[in-house]
Amino acid sequence: MGTKVKPVQPTEIKDKNIVREVIEQIRKPVPLSIEKKLKKEDELIMKFFK
Image (cartoon, rainbow, N blue to C red; front, side, top):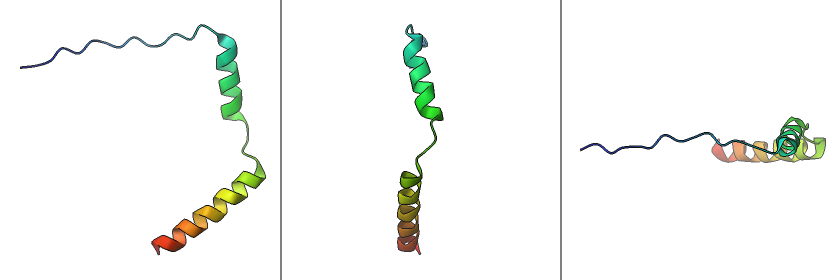
């Protein structure tokens, strides 16, 4: 016996300002301090896996 699946409608975003703000935040470059911190954490993680 199969089950019927209802098709999902895409969400429509009515407020274009919210969309622009989200896109701005995504495109924003990562600060150097955070990049350095992530690099140190990556090195520590790789040491544990060796």
